[in-house]
Length: 192
Image (cartoon, rainbow, N blue to C red):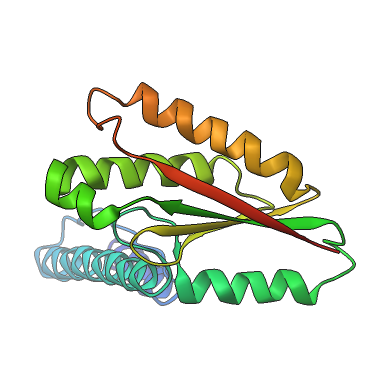
């Protein structure tokens, strides 16, 4: 009876673990009838694990599509504006802050003259520079040529020139891949 009970108890524990979201494989018993049950349960646990992992990946992909710009990985316009509204609504936490806007000059001309890949590379470079400032800042791509960065604890008069210099340096470093024709304009405003 113990020889039969141990594998049955292991199978019951495996089923309980599956209900709890854990994927446990059991050792196959020597009893042929119970071995088939254990093999079937192990196979089912593996299929369920793969199914949940695939669904989790799909949910993550949908979440990204709902919140992020596909090219740059920054928040897209709607998500950025939602996060900015939350920051503006919490006046106590971000009493001194600024909003910086970055515009890629003549994006259509860059696409036409350089091609899509070098232009996209330049846009990703701009996004990477903005991403360096995130947390507690919020960065986003507002449309094809426009980006925004909300910075807490900074003034536009100080942050805008520093951001412009960092963008110039990053785009210059990437000059082998990105033409020196890529120009950006940076502007900013404080809010108190």
